[in-house]
Image (cartoon, rainbow, N blue to C red):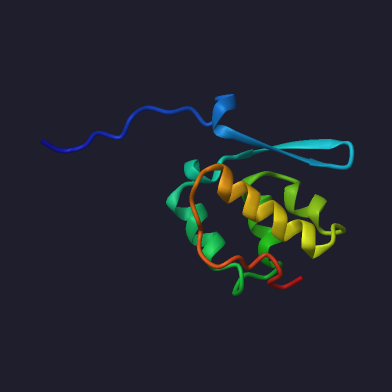
Length: 99
């Protein structure tokens, strides 16, 4: 038989995860809708200059920069909540990489 990838739209609200930092809200794609390239980048955060902040900026413009002044405790909690929302795990949490 086979498999045909269904059509999807990145902008559908149900595929998004809201992140509030201060008075700003970011719409991050739910972890289950990340592309293979985005997952690969997250798995390499320890080797990437700027770590998790760089990767978050690549996925959602401005999100990584907004997290820079936030204590690592809350960055780690965000990553865990984001993954839990999609019932997936992207591997070992490396949010503290290159902080």
